[in-house]
Image (tube, protein in one colour):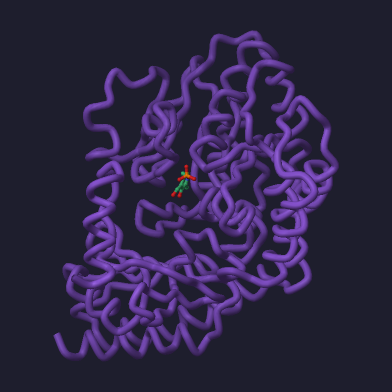
Length: 399
Ligand code: PLP
């Protein structure tokens, strides 16, 4: 029995069966490389689903981790801690938000955003407005509220009812439908600038501007879910900055501590009035260790101009990938995305292509069966992206 098969058996015997996993066991990672249990090397074009934006197992982050682990790890939010404010100041300098709330995951950050929007309406605006409008194809997390907010059917929602009330989903990019859905009960509209799990679907500039205007006209809040799009992934600190809008609330997680679990919800001073002591909390939120690591992540992103790098690499990739679209018009429909959040839309079922790419040593994701999704480390060399495109060309030419 191989080491991998042995592990699969152990996992099946001991871990809840909730994940459809790739037939691979990863034992080690470094930069933009993954290594399996047998020692085979792979080019990582997924970054743990947009988590290791700075690459895996960096020496500079490991140093910060080990130093902080010997100083202060976690004491709860009953205490003030310098690490939290140091990080908050750095994060708030990247955007126009005024306040941050720390948590541990994307779902929790969105849960906080939903709770803040509802409480703001009740306590600050004195309005019985609680409804959250989201878009079809969106993904906002797996807690009961965020899975209800998620604009997808299938196993995400199946069997979990009764689901919480107060969520409406409208068709993607359809401003008329959105306008129709806004009522006196609406508290907020929540959108991803580029849908990630939904198959790398960017919203149009015009639509996003119209959403912001609609929110202002109706005095409701605009929430941007930046869990996947944030932290330089799209070529700016936050994807909403491409569109010149200012959400009242936005959320982050994934790449915040480059692999350690951390989430954050950002709010304007006005929206933040919705919370007061006791209204929301989490034991691990903003622990000293994760905060210190996230601080270093922000420093590196600034020092190494990671956003600019992602924008440039993404543009080069899209240009090269467009040649593939021209070369294989029967199999590839197009390439889309922003920065290094990239999707190659296939015209054919992608499962065999995806498998062949893995066998050639490329780790990526297939969404909706037809979208090759790439979320590589933002530090990746272009040669790795080019090697992927060459291999894809080879596979498409054979089939
Ligand atoms: N929101 C978006 C846009 C996401 O892509 C994800 C995860 O993929 C989430 C929320 C949920 O984040 P988490 O898995 O950390 O709870």
